[in-house]
Length: 254
Image 1 (spheres, rainbow, N blue to C red):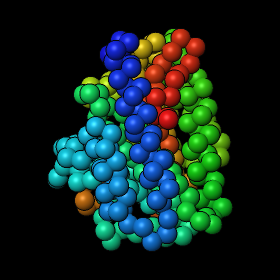
Image 2: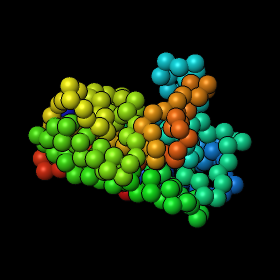
Image 3: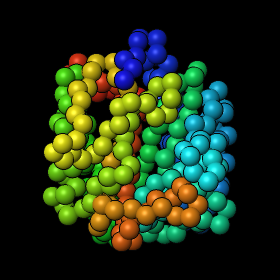
C-alpha cells in the first residue's frame, strides 16, 4: 500500500472535487426517459472540461473487451459495471447506479451513487437506505490504526441485520496513481480473512454493494454487467477518502 504525501493528497483532493462536480451535474439529469448514452456523453464532456480524463473508458479488466463508457450505468437488479447505451432508458421507479472515475494530473478519483427516480417501491427505498447506512457505519470505524475487520464487520452488520446480502466478489480498494491499488477492502469479514491496519495517509475507495436478497451475483455475456443472482434490487455507494489520525476526509465532495 502506498502512503500519499502532501503533494499527492492535494492533487487527489482536487481530483475528487472535480469528480463530485460532474456527479452533481449527472444527478440533475437523471430522469425517466433519459438514456445511459446521454448521461455518458455529459459525463465525458464535463470531465474533459475540468482538464481531466475519464478513468473507466478503455479500462481493461481482462474481459472480452475494454469498458466502452465513461460511466458505469446500472439499473435496478444490476449491481455494477452496466454499460451506458442509447437503448438503455431510465423508467419511473428505477434505481439508477452511476459509478464514475477520472484522472487528474496522473492521479485517480472514484465515486458511485444510487439515485431513486420518482416514486419508488418500498423495497427500492429500503435497499438504498441500507446501503447508505452500511457505508456510514463502516466508514465511521476507519482511522489511523483501525483494522479491516473494524470496518468490514460494521458495514456487514448493517446489511445482514436487515436481511440483505453483502456482495462478496466485488470490493473497495486503494487508489492513487492507479484506479485499483492495494489493499482490497471487502465490505464483509469472515474468520481466516487477511486483515490489515489502516494508516494515516492512505487513500481508499470505500464502496458497499448490497442486494435486497442474495449476496450472489451473475455476470452478463457482455463481460461487464454484474446483477443479483435472484433478481433482487441492488444499491451502491462509494467515495474516495483519505485516512487521517482521527477518521477520514471525503475527497469526492465539492
